[in-house]
Length: 436
Image 1 (tube, rainbow, N blue to C red):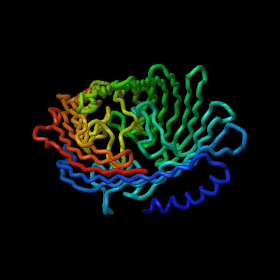
Image 2 (image 1 turned 90 degrees about the vertical axis):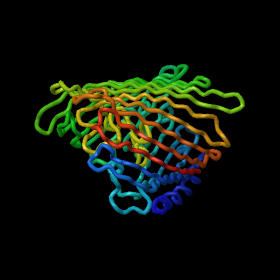
Image 3 (image 1 turned 30 degrees about the horizontal axis):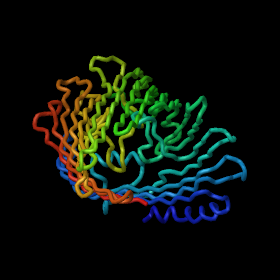
């Protein structure tokens, strides 16, 4: 409700402006997601595994005015967008349970306190050319989000896109300073080249600066400068879809003790999906993913080979967005332990994931999905690399395009990399989401 009270004056102020400047379109969007969750043995690899039950809330409200003509007769148009969002646990004023507290700290707000998710101005056909400039706090993802994503929080900065520079070739340049941190503490800058063929290719270079004290090789740092060079490809061909991304990491890390580590590392993600009509039963889907990132070699001296982008995609509200409902892994960290920076047992780094999944044809509008995940560390200084496997079963129902309901059961079985007797965590959740 506080989010609605905050954005209502902005909405009322936008209406007369839209009328006076011949706005082509005024969009008002609202969304609410409620998720009742029960976790068994949460923080299963931490000091105190616990059972937790709660209701997560995620609400958003946005207003966008599109097609504003500042000068009649010219092709240059403006888009103005403002969106508010709030995430939290229903009825909770206390500290959020771990590991959700670390996710919430990423937003830099109190639970369920409305924050400005996006507030930007977009100039289309800048200088009457095929240029688009976006300034302000805006959504952003590079490729699949492997190395850079706003994670649903918005990134403050500038983005310039040039279309049809040479044939269908497109060019993108950007600079962001994430809003949570003080100016200069962290920044993202880079460029991308987009080439449409039978699919879409994207070549990118990203420079990430991190002066927030993030660790490198277990040491506190005063500054980390990472460079990522990546290739992304996506294809939709009939019933077949494919997505792949490869990236290498370079850079340096200045330790708080005065030393310097050189950075290396790489990551690869390959994902395919096949939709198939099964006679009168309807459409079913099979999917496969193989992904891996390099870890830190145990015998390396002054060379950090652990692929670890600071702003990769891994959050969805208060929860993580990753492989598996329970383990929720990216290619470099996961749920599981609060004692290490990557959530893995000490001495392990880098994650390899294999996912096999199917979605069965709907029965009375309900889709059943079954996914198996197999996790393994890339490197280990202590012994086994087997992190474990996970089984997820989900039932999804969508009423038209505005209402979705989903029930999910997830169970993670720890592998030999965890101490003997480590508990197996489980998750049961029911989510209902609506937007209009």
